[in-house]
Length: 130
Ligand SMILES: C[S@@+](CC[C@H](N)C(=O)[O-])C[C@H]1O[C@@H](n2cnc3c(N)ncnc32)[C@H](O)[C@@H]1O
Image (cartoon, rainbow, N blue to C red):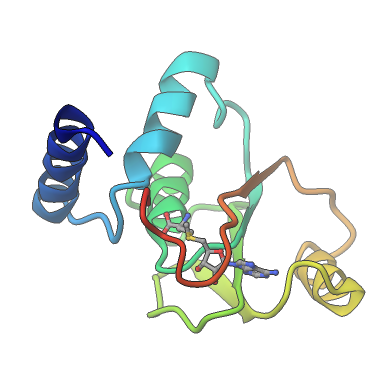
């Protein structure tokens, strides 16, 4: 990795700490939203491969705007690894390739389809760019 790219990564690492995101990958999702308005009209969202949870934090802030009890908003986060709790985010510790995990996710939406599914999957331990 070249020096400038490493420096850039460090900027996001520091910024994530300052702004309270669990990983610098939060900025990837925020940038995608700026470009594509991903969260417009979204109430039910699934965050696949969610640990340590920065995308779930983004979803929570964007869909709820800080109000944990926002009516109709439901966020389900799934990862192989356990994740520290996030207010208003339902967590499933499981493998996203398993049908049983899919059923568990669907069960939380009580017959309604999800409006948005995001996935930031990487093999365990390969979180270099997160
Ligand atoms: C780059 S990290 C995700 C970072 C996350 N988006 C964030 O912002 O905090 C990739 C995650 O994928 C998870 N993962 C990889 N394979 C998975 C699988 N089959 N099922 C569930 N999670 C998986 C890993 O456990 C790891 O936590």
